[in-house]
Each structure stands twice: as C-alpha cells, then as structure tokens.
Length: 402
Image (tube, rainbow, N blue to C red):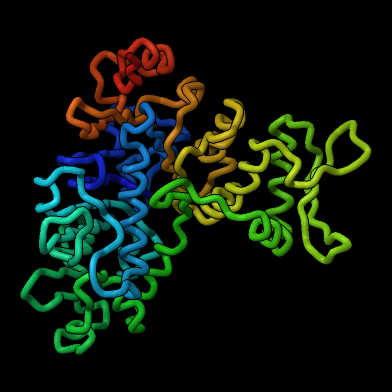
C-alpha cells in the first residue's frame, strides 16, 4: 500500500508537494482504513481520490507515480539520450533543476528478511538535466531503503561519482562488474533485474503487477480484441464481471464470449426483456468503459495490489462510480488490502468518501499545482457533507469561470 508520495519539478508541480495518506491515530476505525502488514499501528485508506478542476494537476500526480514505477521497472532498455519521462515545470528556471520523486510504501511480497518479512520501503529518484531542458537525461540520485525495526537501512544507493551501494543480503558484491554497467539514464533496479540479480528481479516483477491506465497523453484503454481474449482465457474473471454488471442495474443479465462465423471472438451481452444479445461495440460508452477497466481492478483486488486509474469515472453514471469505489472500501470485496489511487470529476463520490480519502488538487495564479488532504482543512467534521462543502468553495479546488 502507498503511504506517502513527494514530487518536485514535475509537469505542473513546480515546488515540492507531498501527499501523506497515513491517517492520525485519533481517526476512528473503519473498513475503508486498513492496517498495512508492515506497520500494524498504521492505517491507510484503500481509496485515494484526487478531486479538482480540469488542468489542475490530478493527472500529473498519477503520471509522477506511474512514471516512477515504469522507470524503476523498464528503463534499462532506454536508448541513449534524454529520458522521455519526468517533464519539468514549464519555466526556464525549472529546466535547469532536477526532478525528484519519493514514494513510501509497504510491499509484503518483498521478503528480504524471513524474521521480519513485512516492512516499509522508500524509493527515491532524482533526475538531472545536463543542459536546461524539458526532459532529464541522467539519474543523479537513486535509493531504495527499508526500515527494519524502525531503523533506516540502505538496500541500494547510487550517487554521482561513487560506486553503487547494494546491501549484502541482496546477493551483489561491491566488486561485481554489473554495478559499473548501469546506464546513466536507467534505473539500478531495472538494470540489475535485467542482468539476472535474483532479488532485483523479484522487485521489478512486483512493480510490473501494478495496474495503471496512465499514459503521457490520454488514459490507456485496451482495445476490444485484447479485452475479448482476456475474458475468453479467464472464465472466473468473466463470471465475476457478469455478476458485477448485474449489480449495476444496467439490465444486463450476463456477458458471454462467442466466436463469430468469421472466426473472430467477440463479447455479447444478454439483456432482460431482449430476445437477442447485444455485441460489445453496440453497448453504451459506460458499459464499454467498465468492461475495459474491470480486468485491472479485478486483478488488484484479487492480489491485494495497487491500481492507479486516471479519470476512473469517465463515461460512468455516478452510481457506477460509487459501486467501483465500494469494491475497494468493503472488506468482503477487498480482503487483501488492495488500494485504488484515482482521479475523479464526479462529485457524487464525495457523498460516500470520508475526508481521509479525498485530496484536493488546484493551481495557483502562476500555474503551479498545490495539493492537500481534506482532513487537513480546519473545521471539516467527520461525516460532513463533502460535496456541499466542495461546491461552496470551503474545500478549495473549484474551477473558476470568467
């Protein structure tokens, strides 16, 4: 689960901004707050919703997180030159500065110590621009730390002009030639994983399990053929979405995968009161969107993993958004502490979410994003009408017209 993320000089985030998802100890217990396995005394929401006007920086937050995960997992294959991620704030001053992102999280599957398998990790990444530029071209600093018994320990650290430090129990000796073969524009994690270092391969494998629809432009939507083949090859998932679609009160009684006379596989939907099934292409935009995002959400829920979804509520009725959020908030549908980080435009979600789950994103007059949790706003009571407060301007983050 994510505990905290800090970003500096990335897209609309000019200055350092931190979102801390850890809730105070005075917060009452609830099913939407979970105790990470690494710290039983800590609690983190299973839903983190970013709310704010168009262009305020909601997607920038998700891109910062997604770019960091992808860089750590895949950057070894980058061609020489600029890193085509991590764009700076759009000013000449920012072009000369590094971009820095730090993520704190727990990952019980990273079992470095059998005596204490569950602990907090912190990944720090700083990217340099050799000459003033929108994009960086080298890693200036990279580190992965854990906190056995609350003490900080370097699992990996990389600094300019120094040998890469790797903890002894990660099976890499200081004299290992692989430590001097790390490209300037690639991650140590990605490089050592590709070179077959066992523990680093396990780290990168876990990163590839994070479900994301975030891209450099618009949210990723898998094409119809990919979706059809996934449901064809995974009958349990197909059964689960058929059940969920029925709960949405869309009049859908079930979804089937059938092979047409032309040999192609297609999705068909049975509707109550209709004598024929409806093909996927003829369903509403909302139904198609649910079907396209369901595999990612279902995988996160089934594995207790992380889903990062931009404009989750796109094309969806408010009640469908509430139902999807409830999958992560309820214990019966989320027994493994899966976590959803998403951006939303639908204000109806504020009717069910609590102040610890909602983060406001807005821009100042200079075009720089600022963000804060609703729980940090003085006077917001638990169980208060967050939608009414938001629309009144009491929470900030309202679009400005005229």
